[in-house]
Length: 393
Ligand SMILES: Cc1cc2nc3c(=O)[nH]c(=O)nc-3n(C[C@H](O)[C@H](O)[C@H](O)COP(=O)(O)OP(=O)(O)OC[C@H]3O[C@@H](n4cnc5c(N)ncnc54)[C@H](O)[C@@H]3O)c2cc1C
Picture (tube, rainbow, N blue to C red):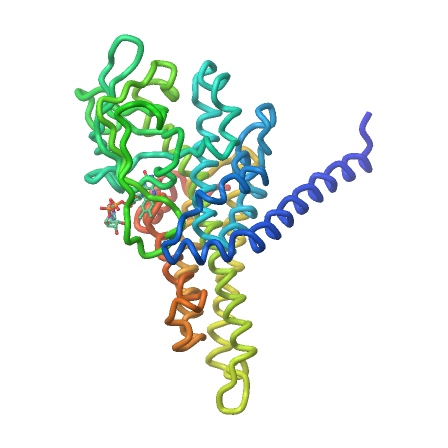
């Protein structure tokens, strides 16, 4: 028999473990990633150099089950960890967010034979994961996918190109949306395949000149008659878009948490500069106009945090709700952009040069309203959900 006191003690030890883990990642990120991220922004190297250290911290196993050595984090803990990474390095945050989302899908939908052979390795630095939906002519409209998988003896042959693939430069495994049935229009003919980055016919072209998150590797993925064995199919044929969209509900919480970490770093930078910078014989933090920028940012930061916590709690209580994830992503990403704008404003001319961190954060924040569904697509998901189901928990 378990007594109430024991239940409370067990619950508090889970909470303590969770807080200790988040604290350890915060310390690691601020000590090891912050300076490195500034170098990556200047174009010297990328987050790839820190993958071994991040894997040692367990960051590549956040969403892997414990049976293969993962941390099997609940969504609330996961979002807090992504926030802490983003505070120090938005590039490291998106790298881990994409890897984690993909590893979760592999665990849910991959065949037993693939998982028995490969899943455990996905917690290691040389097994980075990527997901590839977007194409040159299939962005928001993923159902327009052209990449073709033709059935052959024992598997498929895949040909096509995928755009904007985060982690693509070094990924070992790609989760790729392909068209298996050219006769079925739109999503009915789409399937999800796991493609081995070491397979012949896989090519990667780095995308240069990104506005922000320059430490994150983004590529065009070329697939030229690549062989994919049958047991690399995720779910069943024709379910590809469903597999990906289910993943994006949780992926969007990760991007919202990335935006939150960027926004929090901006608020801290603003407050600290407002304390130190003196004009008209007093710190600029004494001027109400500057106080307003800090106060509005702090309120938007807290509102973002609460929307993310709610969306994560719904996932953790088996009530995953696409509207809640989209609300968190829409609000947190747009708020992060407003907050980063104010952070530059509070810094005046200083905020306009790269030596000042807010200049980089302003650029890094920008992509959060674009990837894993633009703000316009999040609004569509929210409005469609409300019109069809009303507001539910
Ligand atoms: C740095 C970076 C990393 C990325 N990483 C990945 C990745 O790892 N994997 C991956 O698959 N993709 C990735 N993407 C792609 C990203 O998800 C797409 O850029 C995004 O979905 C938008 O697609 P698009 O760029 O083709 O824009 P489009 O779809 O062409 O949209 C252009 C504009 O039209 C609007 N629009 C389009 N359709 C509608 C509509 N129905 N209603 C209202 N407005 C609409 C959009 O909101 C946008 O404002 C990444 C992108 C970037 C920039």
